[in-house]
Image (cartoon, rainbow, N blue to C red; front, side, top):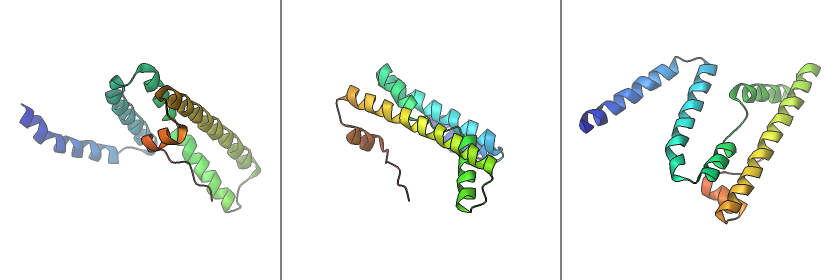
Length: 134
């Protein structure tokens, strides 16, 4: 039985990838979120509940559609083709991104405290790099 599962795994993975290729962008985003959540669930049982909760919050980001729109608006701003309404939308999305990032940093600080380490060390352990701004 184990051999059958092992030989079937690559074929199943290829089927999943072919199916993912046919998804629309929003469907693909939702699928990726579910896969990431599934992966987190598999690792979460080995962590204390408070750490798992903090890690879940640390991994939150802008919703994919909001991130795409933010990226579009930034590109338009750089091309100097942003309308006034789009400028207001960009300001709102920027505020949302900053609030999201602030919450993530707050959770990272709390997690570092729980683990008895520094924020830079924790970020390094988790493979989190601070953003570079041009």
